[in-house]
Length: 286
Ligand SMILES: [Fe+2]
Image (tube, rainbow, N blue to C red; front, side):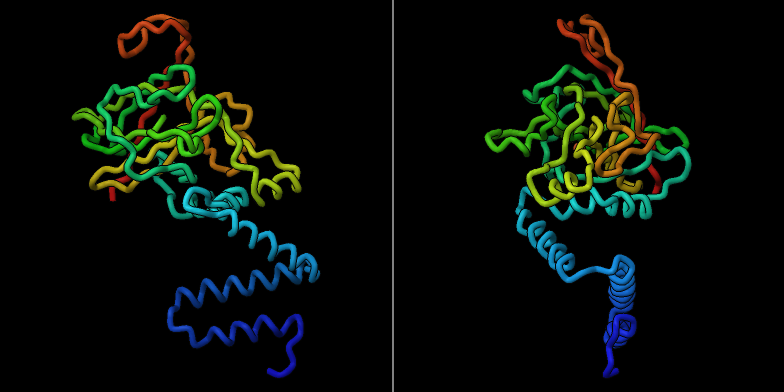
């Protein structure tokens, strides 16, 4: 093929991939080339727009380090993360749905006893959480490890506070023989994703807000069941219908009940208003 034009170039690139030994790589790269070329033809991409795209992706990479993952943020805000989660985690009716993992999980969070205060000094209104981990037919899952992480009342995760030397508002708890789980924490609030990088510029340029509705992250691991990565969202949040990363699923929204000062579920007397949340996790057997 000596004469390459704007249409024949797609076939020419696909022919170069013919000798690829890995069939899945050949499929992914070949289909990417087809869509990438169709995209450029459809929008009639100019050379300066192509360069702007190169500079944007370069800046996205340069923003990444061991604590900051701007490419995941880009994937999240373009809906690719949630699309991948939804495609790969279709659950039968009644099984708890998955949502995005997000960038703030920390491996090796402290294991704490049931009933513990996991806030560890994080600021916020008190929240008492009770939950059960269940099989699809309602039997308790004993010994499930439940990893919990969330933002404080300023909308920050502990890892976003460089001066903080210990974990806050994150822990791992293990369900008892009845599949029960309970802990004390702080009320999660809505928070903006980091906007000081190229993804933030993209949000501004496209007239989008950076906010996620208030939620608590959970990862539930139990032998014999699929790992569940999900959130519980706080009903009534103004950003519920416009989550910047498209992570909301209606089955994951719950009332966080508000209570006047008084007797809390753990038997303590609260001098300030407090909240309670109850949620049952239903795991899919492997
Ligand atoms: Fe989050």
